[in-house]
Image (cartoon, rainbow, N blue to C red; front, side, top):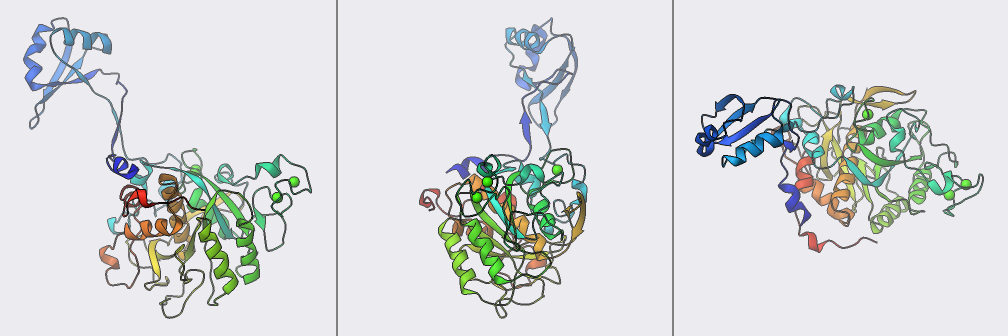
Length: 415
Ligand SMILES: [Ca+2]
Ligand SMILES: [Ca+2]
Ligand SMILES: [Ca+2]
């Protein structure tokens, strides 16, 4: 039901603040009464051509309260002018480099700015299984998940009793220690696209401006082993950490029953796994790519499009791909406190993971499989995508936050 109210939000919104020039609207029916308010110092007026209103400006020495009182005495209700703010565009200085937020083609537009009028903060945490995250990066540090029990606890002791000693900001399953810092750059780039701090005057803006991202470092270089990935899932499932989304910007051709079971268990805990479709330009219905291809209701596979909304030449495709998002020239944070760009389905994936966190904030009890359906069903099949074989269209962040595709009262508490 909440969605019905949200839907009535408009893209431009009005802030009730009076302007220095003291302008007011007067209905044309009341305009003739203005002469009765003799002490009202009208500086100028302008009658609209097509609507029944006139705009007047009052001398600035007449306060808002005084002007309106004078008008009321003459039987006129002055409607004050007020500030109108354009769709939320974050002030972060490098946002213009993030072409995926404003691609210049409506066919490639994920409607992030419009969605941000509704929601910019995610109240659920997102785990990122990757090469770690540079947790000290100037534009990420505020949005890194923190284990306060360990941070305020005893050194070399497992204060929260989750089986991991001093897991302050996540865990490193590659080295089996608490060092989650990224030396490769991949995970830090993923994190910036998903959740660089928005509106902080620094760098860029993530899909979620305010979110908690848990680094789970399972890669040192571009390859790792399945056992390290399964360890990463096991860590995420180990504690009460508020994680409801796992970003998986990796994959492999090998089916793994332990990994399948880990993702199924995540599903039972209400967690959505957002997985890159892969960069082999192949149909993954025929040649699967895991975890994207696990046939589980809490896995959504993400393909990549170019800024004009065409499927990126390297992106995998097929009915398995539930949604596509921009994945080329993806400007983001990277290591050594810097910024650069990357390409691939790896960088389309955190757009969708961030979007999922916003949906889960909007509807806190929506199960993971319903979140997947919401993303898929509100995506747009744009003209450039019509000829492609996909199981979903371009992510539409505004539609996904404003359109309900099933009755809210059917949603149950997740485990
Ligand atoms: Ca611990
Ligand atoms: Ca400790
Ligand atoms: Ca920023």
